[in-house]
Length: 501
Image (cartoon, rainbow, N blue to C red; front, side):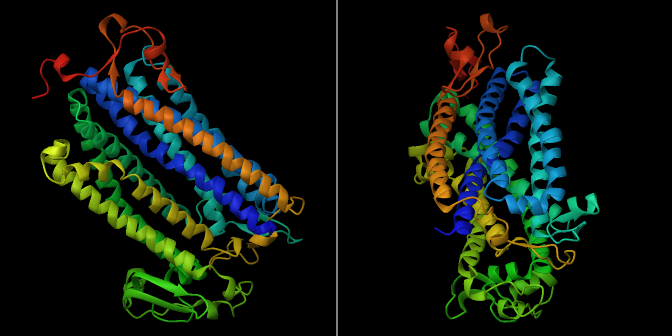
């Protein structure tokens, strides 16, 4: 019943749950914009139907993401009131900008996508799709500006009474040393997530092997693989930049990521285990590998936790209480998942080009590959969550980390950021309620999106072409497609003049 631990668990649960939907929303936002653009250029009813399907999936996911994100902002004023007072002068601007410049942009143009398909110019409809995606990406920027400042404070000073951080340079605070590397790394990982969701939907249609879905499945598979390969290639570069930033700015986090208790040349561990009681790392590693990646040399030493704890900068840490093995495991889980992402993309590219994936039972192993692709979004999801655990738990015991470039005195211990008025039993009650409500929300979202995927791409019949048909019913059906008596049908290649061949 520790107040600080319970507050951390509650925020971790709400933030982790919220971050189920953020990667899917931003990731498929790009997919949605691509298919809307493709439909505009080709004038093909099939492309139009695919675009509308992804608009529906995006909208349902966006809605649940908004609902689950609100609780985190409330917790800043309840569970983390002392923290909010300390960072309020810094966080006010980016959080306000996120709402005014990003969320409103995304919401307004998403409204055009939902209700304006038959009411606005096609070119404006395409622009709305891209602006919706841009709004979601811009929203992530402002949130990451706030979060990155907690990792590497800049552009601020400690107030004379020592109770808060006061902003001195907005642009220095916004573009602190970790903002751009972390933003690039995060957004690229979200695009990978969107690509894998697209691949999974395509593989599901191939698994069902319905003739009316195969052409659409091929288009989705090609788009998902292409976006996935490009994003993953860029992700490798951003991962290196982010790791170098941690090496230079957050020494205790880097020491935990590599299991370093004593000053030494860090190796590049493939897998291992940290015995915290004995302060020893047992790992399969490349000697000097991490040193080479960070500095270009194989023999650069890095300070261990025991040495860092003796410095004035990190005098508050207790090495015996540091979650070293947990951070080590989450970091290496993220790296392992990146390897699986690359492998899955290669398999999808090779066998997708030969149209073997859709063969299913006809070719040995293809049915298994279909299921690998159907379940593949789990891999980037685990990588994303493991990365966030590494970033957030790795900075403990600080909620505002005293990085190497941080202004003097601008740091805050996690234990000093909680609200003194919130009692442990209140945290337990609200945590239980969050779990119950969030489970129900997830079931509802899964049923809605599952219905959209099962329904597949549908297109207007000529007699219904002038009717608005993008209104969404969150009972899991398209209102105008299911509730108004129209007889819309899934795409069928035979209706397109024999395009199956």
